[in-house]
Each structure stands twice: as C-alpha cells, then as structure tokens.
Amino acid sequence: MASPSRRLLGFLVLAGWPGLVAVTILELILLVEPTAIALVTGALVGRLAEAAADDRLTVTAAGGGTGPILAILATLLVAGNALRALSRPLTDRVSSRIDAAVRRELTSRVLALPTLDRVEDAALQDSLATMRSPMLTWMDEGLGRAAVERFRSALTMVGLVTAMLVLCQVVWWWGPATAAVALLLGRFRSGMWRHFFGVIKETMPAALRGQAWLAIMAGSRDAKEVRIFGLNGWLQRHADDNIADAVTRVVAAREALLRRELAVFLGWAATASLVYVAVATSGAMSVGRIAATIGAVSAMFVISMTSQGEDMDEVVAPAVESITRVREAAPSLEPTPPPPSGTGEISLTEVRFAYGEVGVLDGVTLTLGHGEVVAIVGVNGAGKTTLAKLLTGQYRPGSGTVVTEPAAYAVYQDFNRYELSAYENIRVAAPEATREQVEAAAAAVGATAMIERLPHGWATVLSPKYAGGSDLSGGQWQKIALARAVLAAATGTRLLVLDEPTANLDIEAELDAFKRISQARGDATVVLISHRFSTVRKADRIVVLSGGRITEDGSHAELLAADGEYARMFHLQAQQFQEAG
Image 1 (cartoon, one colour):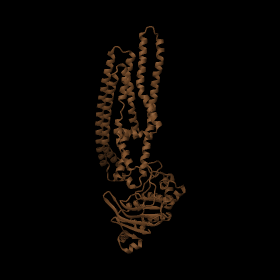
Image 2 (cartoon, helix red, strand yellow):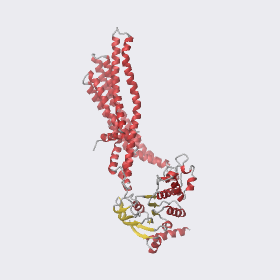
Image 3 (spheres, one colour):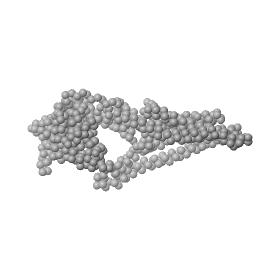
Image 4 (tube, helix red, strand yellow):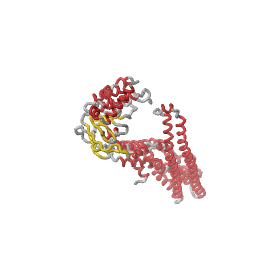
C-alpha cells in the first residue's frame, strides 16, 4: 500500500493540470525569492562599500551604479508581495476543486450501490462520517488543502538548495552543514505538530459527545421534553464534562508545542550565530559576500520553519483511509442499470433475510399481481418494512429469489421533511414533473388548500429556520408525503409502497387518503402497511406476516372466515373501538 504522503499527493490530479502547474510555478518563485533578495542585497551592500572606500567616486556616481541593483531589489520585493497575495486565492481554488471532485466521487459511488442494505453497511457509514469529521473543520483544512500543502512542502527543497549554494560559495561545507541542521529542525518541528494533531484527533470523540449534549439542550427537536423534564442542568453537566476533558488535553498539548517551538528557535539561533561568527572572524570576505551570507542563512530559517508536510499526513490520514475503504466497498461510479420490466409481476420465492445474526424473514414466498392492492399486517417487528424494502429492491435477500419492479416508489412512516418549498417538497418524487402534475398530486390527497394558506403559498419553505418559512403539523406533513406518492404514480411508477404513511391522521382522514390514492394511482401495484384494519380491509388481498413467514393470504372476508391470526387481531381492534365509544 502507498505511503500516506503518496496517497495524499495522489489527490492533486483531481485539481486539473492548469491549476497544479500554476501552483508549482508560483511556489518555486516564492521559494527562490528569499535567496535572490539575499544575493541582490549583498551586491547592493558591496557596491556601496566599494563606493565608500574609493575616494574618487562621488556620491552621484555611486548612486548611479546602485540604481539598477535597487531597481532589481524593488522588483523582487514588489513581485514577491504580489505573488504571496495571489498564493492563498490560488491555493483555495485548487483545494476546492479537489474537495469538490472527492465529494462527487463519493456521492457517485454511494448512489451506484444497487441496494440500500449496502448503503446502510456500518463500515461504509463510519467511513463517510469520518469524511464529515470536525477534525478537518477545526483545522480550517480540507483534503484538498492538505494535498496542496503537502505538495508545497515538497517543493521547499528547491528553496533550501538555492540558499545552500550561496553558502557553498563562501565555504564549501557551510551550505550542506547548515542545510542539514535546517532539515533536522524542520523535521523535529513537523513531528511535534504531528503529535499535537494526534492529541486533537484523540479528543474528538469527547468533543463530539459534548457537542451532542449541547445540541440536545439547544435543538428544536428535543426542546419540549428538555423543558418539561427540566433537563438543562443535567445536559449542561454532561456537555461540560466531555468538553472540559477535551479542552484540558488540547491546552496541555498546545503548551508543550509552544515549549518545543521555542527549542526549535533556539536551535536555529545557535546555528545562525555560529555562521555569523565565522563570517565576522574570517577577515577575507567582502561586505557584499557577508550580506549575501546573512541573507542566505535567513532564507534557510524561513524555509526550515515551513511545514515539511508530515503534519498534514496526520490531519487527513483518517479521511484518506476512509476514501480508500469507500472505494473498496463501492467500486463502481455508474449505477447498475435496472433489469428490464417484465409483465409487472413482483415476487419473492423462499426469501430469507437477517440483520446480522437476528433473523427477520424465513422462507417468504409472495407474488403481487399487476395493479393489485395488497396489505401487509403483523405485530411490531414482524418484518413488514423489511419485506417492503425487498419488494422494491432496496435490500438483497440472504437467500432466495426476488423479482422487483425498477419503477417503484415508497413512502415510509419516517419520510423525509425537506427544508425546501412546498412545491419542491412534492416535486422531489419526480423532478421531471410539470407544475400541473405537482398541483394535481396535491389536489388528489386534499393538500391544496393547506398549501395555499401558507405565508407564501407554494413557494413557502417548510421550515421555521428561514424568514417567511413555516412548519407543518404531523398530519399536514403526511399529506405532502402522500402527494409525492401520487405524483410518482402519475409519472410512471408501477409499484407504490405505503409503509404507515398515515399514522398521524385520524381514521376518517386515513380512509379518505387511501381512497384518494387508490383513485389516483392508475394501474400501479400498491403495497399498504398499516395497523388500522378499517383501512386494511379495503385492500384486494391481505397478507399476514408472523414468525418470519407468511401465515395467511386472502381477502378480508376470506381471512375472517378462516378465523385465524388476522381475525383475532381484527376483532381485538374492533372491540377496543367499541369500548372507547
């Protein structure tokens, strides 16, 4: 496997060659600039010294001789400052291109996975979470910037070599000796920064826990229970304990870092002093050569204090490793093409499925006819939602055969509530739909009046976080979700799965919603999962799931006549309603 540095540098190709070449040229110029300034300054000082020593030269003559040198020095200084001003924007641009390319790649790989169970894989999700880790945010760095900085640090050797050659012209061994010290001090400095970043990485779990406690305390989702139960103090203590531990370790690491930075500075000061003393006592060196030597030593100091890149490896190593794992888990960038649609029949044959070691379905065989409305009932945990995800091809069976319908749409009880306009919240089910189709879908489930009463009607963002935005009640949100199902059916969906999508509606509203969807679905097959038998009884067929198997299958009347599990559950629910009345 490639080293962390090589893997990090490999991301540079994502920036494109123009950007990479521009960064290379810019950085090489900036690295050589300190040595060039040292040489020009030495020449200027030498010229002035000669003028001062030669009584025959007038001040005007001396100034005329130094004019071109001053012009060159001024050009170097102005150009250097201008290029440094350009360095950050150019680096940001190249870095952002790399980060964007990585995001597109990861998104494509995840979307290309053929089934939802592979997306839900714990290892894959952990790798994706690492890419969103606040470690990089805390450092104000991303993968792209880390790659660019690692590349820039590799170029520092060019600047070090040019400064070394200047010193070699004075005494041949001064250059290599000073460069060796510079490299050693630079590596020591890089190592202590790696250690510091390692401490930061180790404290991230505690910091994340602290942030999670604070989010519970301050977030709108949990606000009701936090206030009702008076949890503020309890949550704050947990947050403080976790954050305090992280802060204590980070502060201690920072103090140690400052002490080591001082040691690096003193080490370099001692090295520079030895060179300066040697220059001062040589006696045979011109003033210009002395100035150039001092400038070269100063340039080496600046270059040696530039990160050699190993600290970047430490910061982004988890992200680089995560990308490698994602590429292994999701090797394809293109989605697997859906199988060609057949007669519309959807079937499961001897299907078994388990979550880890916990079995859910055990030998399920089921066939859905074209245009049928099939209800699936069973106790909580019977595997109804799992069965629905197998029917839509989102899960792969552990064994058995599944024939799915590629053109399928599902509405689950925990459907998404997008922070988009009311119009876009429905249109997400079929982005290619027309305005008329979206409005017709809303009308089909009785959501039009509710939407038009919003502050900005169809354009209202369904979130109180935005100016002019508005939240909806649970029942209103479910109408939006059901409108998506109707829109999907109107635009070609051949299988609709409704998994408890009306749990927040009363019985009459649920019956009305189911009636509206049945009328608007066209010839799509519908799979309905509900605990309300007043709605279930309207289905063409009812399937009872129990013990991981289908134990009953028939119409409402047939299952009541069979006097089995369905009849027992139906009579029990009916008795509860009678007692409530």
